[in-house]
Length: 401
Image (cartoon, rainbow, N blue to C red; front, side, top):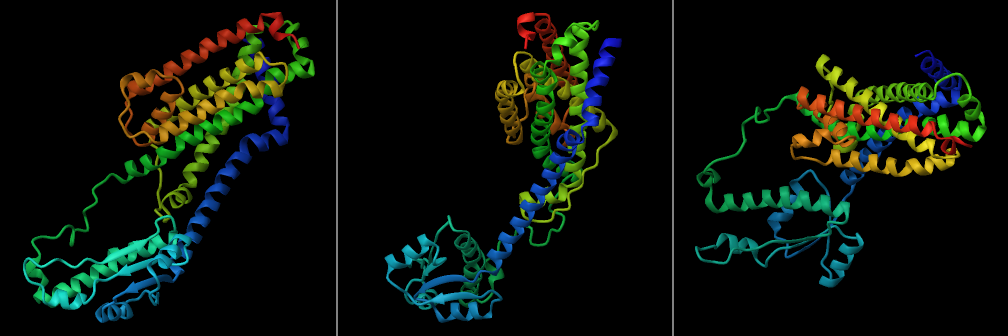
């Protein structure tokens, strides 16, 4: 145990004394996270403001006077332009120079007023370009609000009282229609993003330090003197693994705190609105979250050190670790876009089970059995990898610089 402690202290001290490493491992990722969220939030706000302030360019054919009156009475302003050739209008729509083309049937008001049962129902055609933001926004507003209001107005002129045609309404006077657990809803929203960021940032933070712990010492020639010291090689391995585990675990804790604190920015970046999401962690959730982070930090540390053992330099070690990093990236994405309830076997798949359980912890949908299965499977794999690293340390051809 003494040898493990000495190696552990040596590695921790090396990181603590290096201000640049402290900044790059603990502070820089958190600052980048907040900066990216702030930038995304501002970009979303600017885009929405730009769309809202845009005056839609609309071509209208056979426009009834009553529709023009409705537009004039409305709050929104539109750039109504004279008709051109059909192909020319469609070309402008493709290029984004025009936003909508509304084609009314001829004598629409007369057709509505003189309608008899069996007559053909008039059709208003609206053409737009869904690949253009201005055009899509104009289409949603015109088709969903303006034309619907115009239809109701004409219908009222025909029958007099619209309530005679109304069989029932849906949520027209139901302010309590949303029934949900706000805490669970907020946790579920956070659970979509947090596992992804934790798995990526935790691995990335450990990768730079882990490759230097073994391959870096080989490259500098200090590993040879360490191997001939009176410290057992198994103690060297465990000391380095535990040191990397503590460093990556602390960094992941910082990331979680920063993400929870910046939840309003993240929700605005995703939904484009201020949702005011807040996250409250219970004692039970905190224990589960801490356990998973410890197991994940241990597993990542053993993975990175294992790849580093077989490398001669930090550059070579980084090359070996990169496929594992890409795998972690894919696993994080898979956990974000999973809607089906995981099967019981899923909680025994290392790495992936951690992302699923992290999501379940935050949404308060994970059981202690699922948590225990995930924790034990990740710790077991980490222990196996630690044994492999010890065996590799005992081979001179592997540890030779």
